[in-house]
Image (tube, rainbow, N blue to C red; front, side):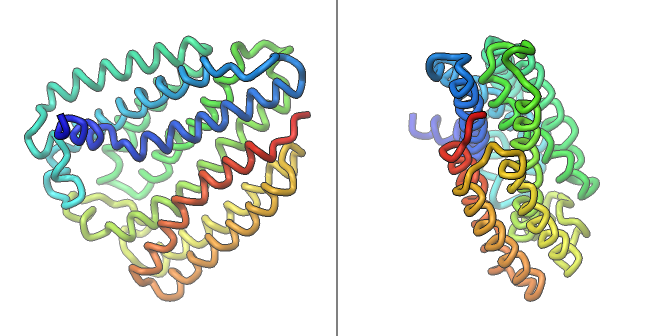
Length: 302
């Protein structure tokens, strides 16, 4: 039984799936908080919040499962992935396919219960991640851009899921701005996040032919792209303040966290050492949940 849970965790990339669900659930609560401030709802709908978590986890798990089916032979080549259940031979690709399809349909159905848009976006996310991003990883660094789209959809899905319907009297003009901004913050964040990971795991990635660094090499230009992306993230993370739905706390955190992130990326640019890339990577792990949590608690309903 212990091996089963271990294999399932590796199959669905549990930590990644948890991160996705976390960002969607926070955005859901922001959307519910907005409606509470308008008097549209009497209280937060925790039932729908739970449906979002379960459905979002299943959809993400399915996308990861399809990704591993496609890359099973490549996973055998890399140290960090060779012990996953399919490349290790503990699960067949047929079993993985059945499980992936089941999770995809169930997760999409659950999200569709919240509203049509969340169900459609979940399908789009699976298709883009598994069948566009996955094959592109061996062909071009543009894969990071393509992968950043489904990676940034969870906050958008979570915010849309907070509205039982997108009727004009519920979903106002400011809600479109909030949904897009939540998407943009996570979208831009993924570039320094993935490039730092690609730098740290470059030798392992090369075994499978993955080309994720901007220049396909750990050089000054790749480090420059990483640094510039952290700079872009600072004004993007301040958009909630600019549009009036973020308060002083998110403003302060966005500046402090953004400058810290950029400083670490600048050190990578100057030194191009593995230790510096690891610092950027670990900073990225803390950045996005911290910003999303503080934004939720600091949210100003208009």
